[in-house]
Amino acid sequence: MESEELESLIKLLDDPNQEVFSAIRLQLNKMGSDIIPTLELAWENSLDELFQTRVEQIIHDIHQNEIETQLKIWIQNGANDLFTAAYLIAKFQYPETSKEDIRNKIEQLKNDVWLEINEHLTALEKVKIINHIFFEVHGFNRSNSFQTSSQSNFINNTFEHKKGSPISLAIIYGIISQELGLPVMGVALPKNFILCYKNTPHISIDDDFKEDVLFYINPFNKGTVFGKKEIDYFIKQQKLEKKKAFFIPCSNRKTITVLLKNLIDFYLRNAENEKANDYIRLLDIIKKKD
Image (tube, rainbow, N blue to C red):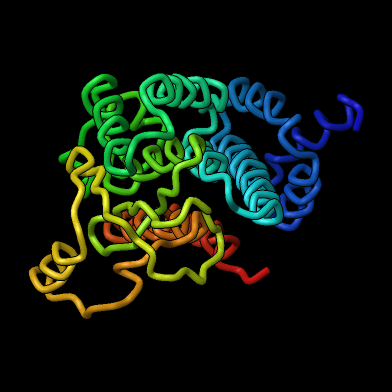
């Protein structure tokens, strides 16, 4: 579309007729993110509250559509790249998030671990090295406000502040491990998402896992290693119904599902229903059967 046509459409956004706005909104949404700078400039140059609100709605629509499209592509590609999905969730909340910046920080972490690790080490020795690099050298730690703030669930904030929720720390720890070829996967333990080190070198992305766990890792407690007895104790302490899913590895797709559910629960508890509904749309894409 020519620039003059685009500007003509944008000027009509102050039309009080809802049907006119709906038609224009549909047309602008189809144009994608290329028109966002033009929309932002129009917003800055207007003092009309209705116009500004409508521009904000359209920018939000375009942004949501793009994230949804990228998540669908992620699923089509096998949903085995944990970094891409975690980045998209962060970008959904923070549109200016730089993928390159996060990628560089991950590469630095990976490189630091790679320099210390070798194939002759045992699984436990490898995890001890990751813990040393992750928590001592790079200074990652638990966020004590993760239940009262959504920010620590996003990997960009976790990298920036070096503090994260159980799920965000587990995701970054999992990304590093998986990209180094280690069979570390998530375990969907309620209230404290953890990781496990599988007994087989093959990292499966299927939902149908066998019970082949060597040990468990708790990134929210500086990578503490433990066994099934500790999970049994936790389940009893929290008065939870014992389920097989609390002991076995889950797919990266399931890990992202847990992340989205945590965010949805947070926004619903804080009566941010519109934001919760946005994440419900993303969750529906992740949960949809192929």
